[in-house]
Length: 96
Image (cartoon, rainbow, N blue to C red):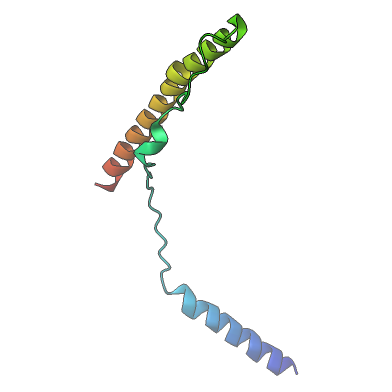
């Protein structure tokens, strides 16, 4: 019985030794995926309300909405786009 255990242990170690001689190469590649250009647009107000029926508060809310869409959103999208472009350039330099 002890001989059988020694034999199995030796076979197990021999199996490990044969696979250790082979080199398992794993390579990683960094890739920057650029989204479609249609995703880099801020939402627009499609339909303006009737100007004659607007109250002062509704006009103020519309102006805030337009300001948020046109300035804040555009700044954020431009920053994201610039970051992705720089990341793409950096990863392409590492490949070369």
